[in-house]
Length: 168
Image (tube, rainbow, N blue to C red):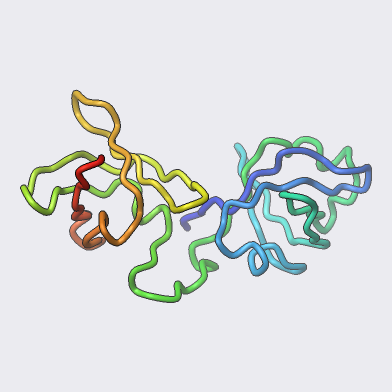
């Protein structure tokens, strides 16, 4: 069973067992609905069912069945919320990917066929995502996830072909 991060519990909210969650998903409205099952990460992962959910500023406030008290929920501050792989949503098109599919791919320069490194993380910026590529013996390479740069993603081969712009 593979689990994937969809949010982080950053604090409690009130005394009735609500928690503030920073969502890390493109589908927060679907992922954080009443009745949805999640897993709270830890030494012994805890399966929970969402009892209440509502938006509050940049957070989502959640409470879980059987954890309706601040004393019960406080121990989970700072923990990640996970979802089972079978609960992942279908993506709208073939050129959309989950972060876990991109991280770890080998980056190859389309023009020279030279290996540049591996994608180590993805930064979410207002204009577009930026892929951080770890290079051996050099600084990290930052690649904007735009059509002019990301040429082809081959998940089966574990590779992504890119065009390096002059400015990069």
